[in-house]
Length: 127
Image (tube, rainbow, N blue to C red; front, side):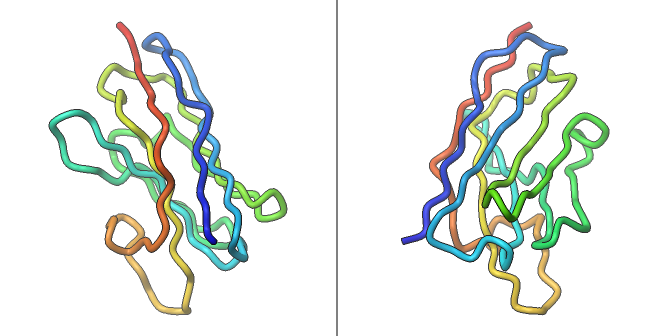
């Protein structure tokens, strides 16, 4: 079965960096667009970043542009989210998600686009 397993979360001070990883299994990873979403307590799940199956193009939520970088390594069946200059408001559970590319234009900023989801990894940014 398909599994997405996030790792790399933790506690970091504001201004610091973390790199999240999402390892996929049970799927042909190169066929999938990947996304990162996050959910903070009391808030709706929101889009963070996405990348299409072959690594381009990429998409970012406005508040993380210039700070976060999404990348995809099809050989390693992994997607990464490099998070720099972290802010308190980045605190959330971060989820990776996978969308099978079927040759149609899909909005990777929408959670409903994705079929498979990981269980999340907690990122806490302290002041």
